[in-house]
Image 1 (tube, rainbow, N blue to C red):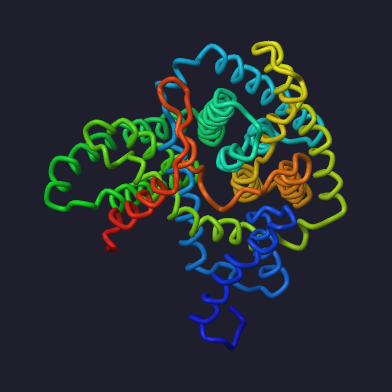
Image 2 (image 1 turned 30 degrees about the horizontal axis):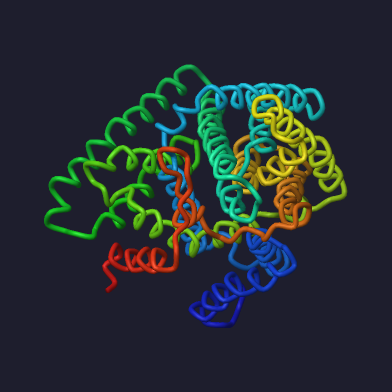
Length: 417
């Protein structure tokens, strides 16, 4: 890193910039994630700073792992099964969209089927964390919030599956081996959790948070070695933890959710900053800007129309409300950034297409703030303490005392008291 300042001071200044500058600019409805990405782009392209910095890399990894660990913890398969008819319809629509977008990318951009499928995922996979974070700002009923949450999570599950199949379908042998390894991971994780609950917890109380986080990191690195990025392993660990609510209640408790949320809120900015560092001068061109704007004009209105039409047909909801809900589900930031990097590293897509994806995802991330005048989401996983859906789909908002208890729980889990 070309600087005469002590490295410790440089990192302190970076932390200050990532946590003060984005929050200052939020008053202008600029999402903190976009600001941090811009800071990374300025540092990398403007000063050549922090590129290939191992400290930034590990902090970024913690960010993406904790974000998808939280997403896995939020999944309630029982609730998804109860509402499966409408969710299946939603997923069928999404599958058709992906198929159509894959074909269009092949025809218009001359891509092969695998990179074209990944491009379709980048364009149509919503960023679940951003969606759930904006729910409190929308004038919605509890049932509508439940539907948005369910659709976002269901879409994410399918997207992860498509991502895995697409990346591992180079050959039948590779796909078979990768599937066996992933299946082994899914089968081994419950045994690891059960052993931890019976052997370790009785002698090491309040160690659940450290165990959950480190398990997610190890699983994430395992799936990264498979070539399907960190997020799959972290998500699978979150899903596994959900299965142990009864046997190990602390593993998926409200306090654990809040602890992971706070952990993610610190490290996620480094993920967006690191993504900005990967932007190169050749990615910023007139062609990339025009193609990115074309993606926005073609994809965003189509998604709004589909969401609003589906809700009107199935729920007889006013079209205007469906448009608002569709706009709140527009941001694709995390998935688009992840897939854009995969496309460049694994498939050597042109800088124009890479830059266009960046323009597209930054643009659709601004939609809730500017089009709906919603407060931009924080660097946080969804606020589980503010919206908790019970068996009947009712929401319970946490009061100040509850939030204080959750914060105290974070201290307990980390053993810092």
